Length: 229
Ligand code: MN
Image 1 (cartoon, helix red, strand yellow):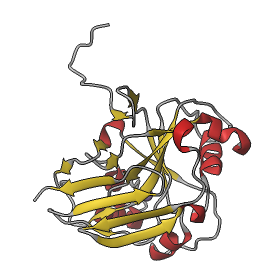
Image 2 (cartoon, rainbow, N blue to C red):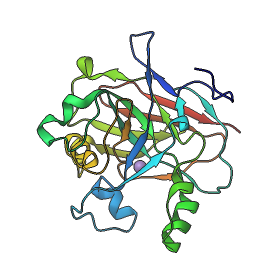
Image 3 (cartoon, rainbow, N blue to C red):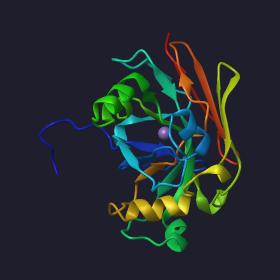
Image 4 (cartoon, rainbow, N blue to C red):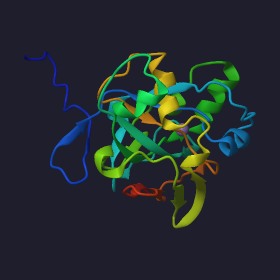
């Protein structure tokens, strides 16, 4: 098949221990999925149903990249998250079958133009321009679940220039990974290649040009990105 324009390569992530790539289809993100983060954003962390937003697949940035500071913002924020990569699609997936759909895991950043998101919230408008912008989804190489197992607990943290800013534990997720997959699959038919950014713990904050971000989830590769000066 020939295309009428040059479309570029399919967005993809490396796989730990393999020369093969994981193709990235759609990126779903869960909002306010840790109670402390919901509180810091001014919301009641009562267990209301999870909600989702998206980023384009080509927002993926590989580990160890230097990223240009994004346009149109003066308040870029970091959100460290466990990333779930789906190997099998489906609709209306039950909680007890949900982990069968997971291919692997990575550590990612849901980078956020907080000023644009805040304005959108105030105006009752979509969040996209606060969330779905160029280079807004850094992610490590994926580890196959066959090697890592399925994490239900473990520390998750983020450092900016060596200082801890975000800290939590996967066990504090309001909606855990199987519940999140199950719920999302009731809204859309999930596809192989979809990523789910599972939410961020408390401590989100600003990133400036020149900052180095280091993210970690116990049992997975660390993520390091630097914002260009
Ligand atoms: Mn997030």
